[in-house]
Image 1 (cartoon, rainbow, N blue to C red):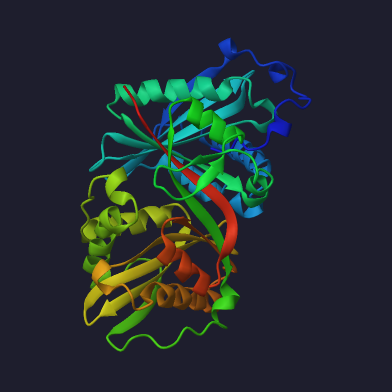
Image 2: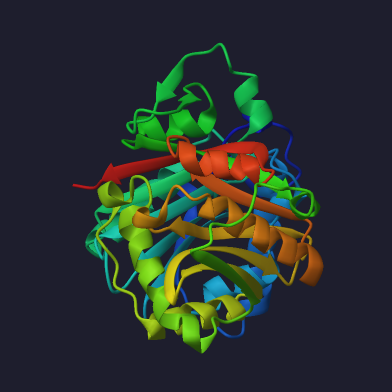
Length: 377
């Protein structure tokens, strides 16, 4: 959720039906992935894309964060055996003025929901966000989803302008966010606790060709590929994905251990292809054992900006700069094989070793992200 611009709360609005919003007239519709009326799909998704682009334009995060049409379509049209999504769309006078998403796991962590919501930048601080959140919480609680997680992205400039103001500290013990920023104030007033702060960083892939951090330790090798996971690496990738739910900083406090096998990796690959994403992966091997990986998504809608997926080095193999070697190898492959020129990644601020790895790989700070949690009654 991004509600970071109070100066955009009450400008003039051309649409007469929403110039003075009446919350009593807010119409909120709940939509499940794959359940859209076929006759309305194209028009509806175009409306959502327009809303998302307007919301991002006010965020200060830049055009790389504009919505990706293929990803939005895939989210609305497709559910898988392992995950699904639900959506809430709020309208005034027929126009979308607020929307929310819940990402839901179907095999594990079935009491949890990862949610995101946004309000039209022209209509913030009018009660629309509260009304939408209350409806989402009621629907999710009725379905047994009582553990909520949410995120808010704040551009570096917005945080810098509040450097001397009171800050809200994260429960993790590392990092804080300015308490007066609208998104921070909104979530904290509605019962969410700031669990963790993440740093969003950006790296230019061309920089990787100039980086020298020494040779990879003799016991290890790094392989890279583009697209679906090769058959010979499916089991190794399944093991590493499963360890992501236990080995990543803070993971054990936020979720239970997930269960992964080769079929789930294949399903994830297929879902990404359906979303219009080309995955670029680097895998570290110790003999035949998969001991670490990193991945970057290249959207077909905007190929110059890549999005970091997971990165993990197995605990017993840390201390050899494998994470840095993996990222640099993957960025070099991106520079040679793709149109990706920039990669964005997110890391918990207490994850000092990964931030150090990112520094070696050429990343610089782009934004700050709050990870929030709430337990519903």
